[in-house]
Image (cartoon, rainbow, N blue to C red):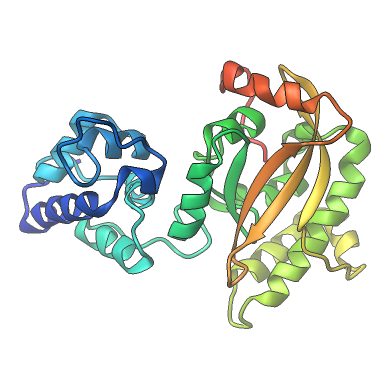
Length: 289
């Protein structure tokens, strides 16, 4: 990519510095520490939160690095708890198009991120109403797989569920029919809640009706129900069967959800979830949901 020598990229660096200075470590789940010399975050802390190298982030603040990708801009916006307007401004400064609402780079409400950062002992993630994963904590990656590289229609787990058999490996086969019905009922509820001019949900529904006979048949049943809480059996490649409660917190407009997973009472899942931090992501086969 070309170097960032323009006035606009220098402004991007200045904007990043100004936003970094206003974020307290406690705001993003970091300890304050006894020897902190800056009121906000340090450069290395922003780099850690955004999944970037310290050298790369330093270059960005200097306005001298390479043009950041759309994925990196989204990660920086989340790390710095930017508002929607600030996030869009960051894309403009980086000469990148502002991504369409609903994709993997969608803006996550700072309040959702704050809650996610505080859920350190349980798997948790933020998804859209169409089941596109926006951000995961490390335990969610360890339990469910890393979803950060998924783009286009495949970014939606509902789409993958009905078009990619590999997506169903997460659940025991005996639970597939129940999950299919629940996904279709939830999608109908989410689509109805959106503005009539919105085409994202309608396009997805049309594509699934054309590509999946199972989805088409279930769609004709007209079942409608948001997935607010579920008891699920998940198949983990290293831990085996893990039974969890999946709880949902909806944003005010219903377009985003914070999901977190707790062990089901009466099972050994509490001990299994404790092992996730030890296992990390090394034994997770791939992206699921």
